[in-house]
Length: 416
Image 1 (cartoon, helix red, strand yellow):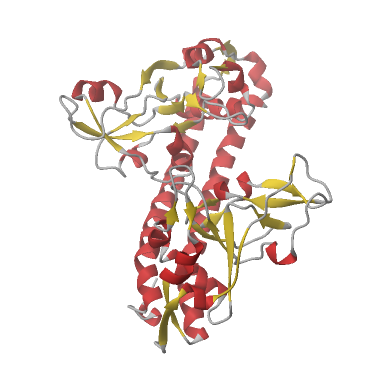
Image 2: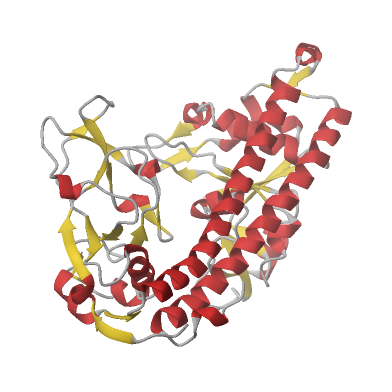
């Protein structure tokens, strides 16, 4: 299918580029508010509305061209480590714009909008190098973006669409697997509530605390970033930032650290452990986030694993890991952990011992707990299998993306 290809600066393919607005924020939605996206919404080439805010158009109008459309390319324009991050939005569920820390790019028609999005993603590393300024004040140089990023493209729109179709098929499968995993987690949490919270027999069960079900807690270790003195044991260290990824069935991006061998022997994470974040949080997000450790997770790493010293590991009684984990999550979703936090403005700390020893819970019959554990093990196996498939799919996509976008390989030769 190979047709004629051209290489031009990005500027020659852009028909519209604009910085976002300075929002007039609103706390509550109304007929005059729209969503406004920001840097936090841009992760992994995708846009999430989870961190978006509301802008009041009555106080400040938004030009029509600055309303976000499906397939628009959004690039973070400021911030150390985030300036240059690229995403292409697929769905726009409601009227949306972007703030002044992002820029919006649209094609001039020489290439399709979707093709331009993938072409820019293929240059993600180079775009990230275009930030300038002092620490904390970095900003993406727009002229360098337009003039130094060279885009290869086929003249044929059929070939452009074929390339996009190949890459989209991978991205769609990634999305489907993520949605399946989200649904599986929700089903498991709903089953916990049905069996252990809404169960009319629960009033007959013994009352207690998590101390009845957790044999011990283990502190984390951060060690050194390279072998130093007696810190010779290389480990992967799960942080609070890794918890959402692990919960989603993904491998996460745990850093390698070097700790004392004796500390590793005492702190090594094993199947059935639960890692809890005890420092951090925000005004709207409490500490106490948790992730269950499984053999499926550990098998994806070539070294052992510990948690950081901003987390603690729980070791539940045999057979009670899933019960403790989902009970913990049930209480977390109800904001119970805010009551067990201490610390001044800034970093918050969880009084995890106080929570474990005093928060009242019901202790279900052992046979029902075992049945629940068996169901959850099956759920976790599916979640991690999907996570593993997504890891492999992402690797394939990231491998062929630059090759397809440079014309190095013919799209008709790609078989998925």
